[in-house]
Length: 300
Image 1 (cartoon, one colour):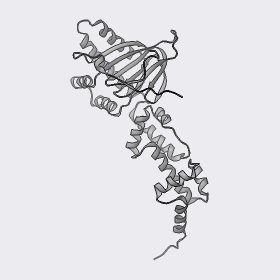
Image 2 (cartoon, one colour):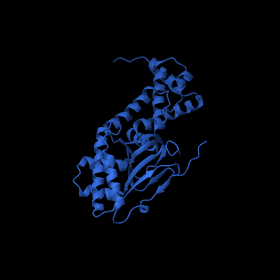
Image 3 (cartoon, rainbow, N blue to C red):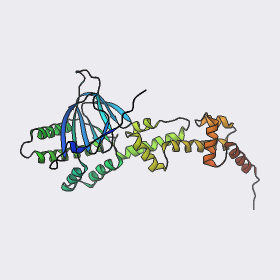
């Protein structure tokens, strides 16, 4: 049995100054740090080795070139493959406040699409997972880290310019990546809902859907609520009851067979759920449909 640790909140005032609400570091990840959320935005990138990245309810393997945008409130932690010295996982982190991001957006001539993009990431609490195929992001991060650690004249301006470069690169990469393209993202959600409607007997775990779409379970539930007006569990139940009504109306299957066909073995629960949705038991529904179908048709 796994032990659930409380999610700690890492505060930005541990890293930022009034003059510079941005912080850079290079970390060899270990097993010491617990999963945490923070009150600032983080862009992080794997530059050496490999391991796993745990983000909210999902986790996946990471390797050199993997780039992530982590919004405020989303919990995460990196883990190396093992504690062996030969299994290093090195990550560069660039963290900054929302106020600093907004200041940059107001100061520089960003296109409206970029402004909307980063605003939606924050509002939806949606992470980005990208791949730095040509090493451009790594070069920006290394240059920013050098400026931050050496603090030569003009370093603050160079860091600001570097962050602008990094934000534009993240946006461009997201447009080219089908895993984060908004149209593709919405299409995958619709495809999953259609699959639930077609194959009502299959129980699709929320973490499986969320992982396929590329979001957290929490955000998946919010999206389904917005799209369908109900939770994932409620959506599955509604789909199953719709199929039950069709089978009761159009087939001679007995009620226990229909319950099994839509994914229910517990007849007591099935009858209670059906009555909750339809105002009558499955047997009463079938009798009413049969009675209506047997009535003579009146011709004028």
